[in-house]
Image 1 (spheres, rainbow, N blue to C red):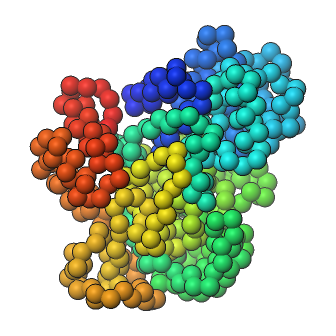
Image 2: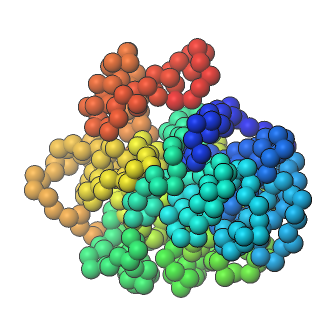
Length: 470
């Protein structure tokens, strides 16, 4: 039986409070937080009061996954999904957004609409569904880890307010997510690669990542840093993924390629074999991304221990979804092997992002995705905050800018632990709320007062004076 953890219970309480004054609430929480479980408990509470609810998702696998969670919580439910019978008496319905948008004239508006992966709400079909619900007087809850579209467009048009769950850093510190070690060779040379719809053109990226050796080899570094661990490799295309899987097998690693066209039963068998330890590496294309739960498909807990990033992307959401696969709780650090330059492009997964309904401000290349910029040493591949000298090897940087050269060598470990310890030392030295605000300003945070308040609240919670998360 699923039970809510205290921070999930707090999250639901914050959503309920927001819905008292606003019609549409965007609920942001990190990958691995348990947003589907939160949605299930919201559904149970809604039906207990005699109200109807629709929980909408955008992929068939997520329909099955959500249905399984609802069943485990004890919620009878029907479906609005092509090929499944429609139960007119169901209080709760799990809906495919693609089917729901075409049946709005046949379905009564529910009391509450919950939209999973709500950062897609600016797309025409999603917007149609949300507007239908709001015009019919329904309350709307959007669930997402990253409340921006790829273009950087915000969601203020669709939601009145936003509720934030605890940060990734807080979830790691409190053992709700796994700690991690990251290794990175730098950013692949993307000169001349075009963009389309806000991301790199897939065919051009495939040519670089599949046919060119860039600073190390994915198989070699998996064997060096994660040998024997359950790994996922995120690839550019089917061809690329198949090629990567073949290279792993040639090196003696049991590996399989999966994608959205792999028959459902074949996927289920592969995931079960992976869960049982018969397969060490699954390579994939756009399969183990948004909301996908391997454990649900396998019918047992599947702690992913390593991710290999082999697809350069401009999408912060895609990047955080990918690294988030390995951050599910376990008793040892996850291994992130970044061959795509995404760490430098978007930042560390536990960076303090300033989420907002407003459009995302553009970042300078190589500045990372959070408020704290990143620099990579071209001598040892160490990734750190800006400094005139590399804190790892003592390399002195030239004053003028020059691009990181392409070097055939080992991935350098991103010293996550030392970076986090240094930040903790700085925070511990701040003995008052005013000291924390000053530290936030020194670090260049956009809202230092808000950040300081979160840290101060977290300290109070740990000392037993409060029961809220930072």
